[in-house]
Structure formats: C-alpha cells, structure tokens
Amino acid sequence: MNSSFSRGKANMRYMTIQLTDRLNNAIRHNMRSFTATGLILGVVLGLTGCVQVAAPDKPIVINLNINIKQEVVYRLDGDAKDLINEEADIF
Amino acid sequence: MFEYMKNNKALTVLGGLALTAVVATPVLAQRDPAYSAARSSGAIGEKPDGYLGFVSAPSGATKALVEDLNIKRKAAYTRKAQATNSTVEQFAFTSGCNLIMRTTPGEKYQAPDGSWQTRTSAAPIRDSRCP
Image (cartoon, rainbow over all chains, first blue to last red; front, side, top):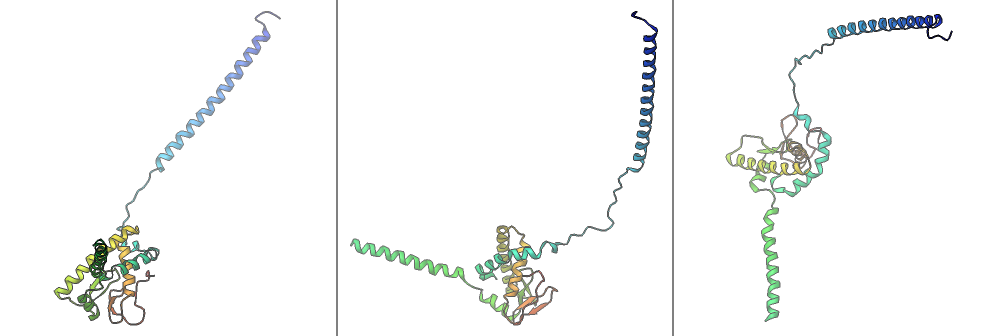
C-alpha cells in the first residue's frame, strides 16, 4: 500500500477531477447567464435612455419690477431720508 | 507792538472764520426760487421712480430746470446706491416714496397708476412697497 501508485490514490484523483469539472461547468453556466442579462439590459437602456430636450414655446419674460422688493425699500429708507435732507436743493 | 501783532493775528483768524461762514452758507441753500415756483404752480411733480416729471407741457426754462435737477438726482442716487450696495433704481424708488410723502398740499405727485394727483392733507397714494 506504500507504493507511489495505488488503486485508492487513482480513484481519489479521478473523483477530484470530476468534482473540479462539475464546479467549472457550474461557474461557466452562471457566467453565461450573467453575460446574457447584461446584454439585454444594455439593449433596453440603449432604447429608452434618450434625454429629450424641448425648447420652451413661450418667450422668456424678465420682469424688471421684481428687482425692487419691499425689504430692499425698507433697508434703504433711512439712507434715502438722509440724502434728501443733505441735498435739499435738488429735492 | 508784538502784543498788537498777536491781536491782529487773532483778528485775522476770526475774519477768516467769518469769511468761511459767508462762503459756506450758499452751499446749504434750499430750492431754487424758479424750482419752488414750478412745484407750487403744479407744472411739475414728483414721480414714484424718484425723479421729477411734467404735469403739463413745460416751457423751455422749466424743462431745462427739471432735466438739470433729475441729472443731479441721478448722480446722488448712484453715489448712495454704491454706498448701500443697492441698484440706482432701488435707491431712486425708495427716495421717490419719501419725496411723494414730503409733498405739501397743492403740489403734484404721480400715483402708481400713472395719473397726476394733487396732494391734499390726506396721505398720498403710493406704491404698496413704500414703507
């Protein structure tokens, strides 16, 4: 039983090879399905992933009146009063 | 002699001060009489934007007077707007609120709808944003 080649050892080696093959096949199979899923996803995204940019049909109107807000008027009120008193000849 | 000179110096200083006072007085002058007359006659009035406007077609002299005052006002508004970190329009509008408030009965001012009103003792019609 101590020889370098025995029936038991050969048997074990055969079993190991078989297991490894089965494992490899399983991985390969899984990889194939992954690749398929990825391809399908890519195609779907390619079809629906367009970004649509539409120009507004109404002209853009900027109301200049909005520049003067009540809070600004309140903030400037004291300075305006000072100016009117300082330069009374032009007001 | 020295005493006299010292006195004289003091007099000179006093004289200089008096002269300064005389020269400085016109700077504090109030409205030009022609401007006051145009205001009280109702030919011109205060607008909500902070400038003077014509209520009726102006004479050449009145037109020149108002244009000159409006240029001076714009310069003052511009200076103050820079100091207060605001726009010239914002500062002019705020001044307009105050100037309409300060009109005296009989003077003209422009309401927010653009119509010219005569100031009465009642509060003037002003923009809703006025304080």
